[in-house]
Length: 261
Image 1 (cartoon, rainbow, N blue to C red):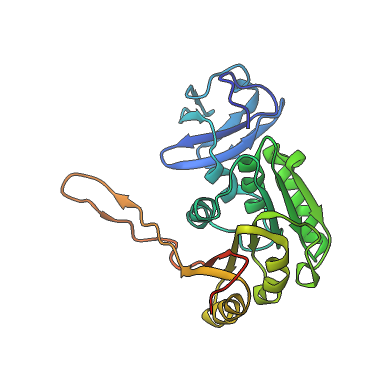
Image 2 (tube, rainbow, N blue to C red; image 1 turned 30 degrees about the horizontal axis):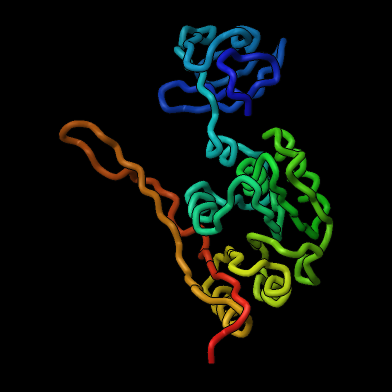
């Protein structure tokens, strides 16, 4: 994502009109057909982020710089994505930042992969394991769209069979049986490194936590996140009717070298 102010061909732009959003790549000659009218993307080139254009029927459209949440919610997907509300806590509690070495189990559609790569720049790396070739191809394309391919190494491998890398800062798993990776994670993580797994059901969590307790992991915690938006209007303020509720349980743990007792 470019941080320059003037929009050029190939740039990503979030089109905003009355609460509706469209994430587009600016392609010369392309016309976007929407329910608010046609938008000629040629008109966007040379504009600034924050400028206003109109559709062919006069609807006002603002040109905004997309953020990472816009990217995540608009990736082409064949699997359920990790939602921004969960990604935020993963980045914070997993201490993912510039220079981090991260192993991801389950590339999926590449939404989380792209955000991880964006965060570990300029000298970190994400190693992303995926067993299904069609998912791997899609994840690669989505990461390329974010412009962070240089920071990801994709592997067509089953992470439950082993982890190639060592001295890893953080391992993040979005797979059906994360407990099968715990032993490998204990060998691959550096001291104090972070184990994170995402599971939709409690029985998966119980199996994973049980394995974590067998190996050198402490500070084990399980949580789920909820974000609720509000309508704000004087005399009518209330929570919005729709919200994304339970998406997954998130398991966190830290590796140490010895367990007392």
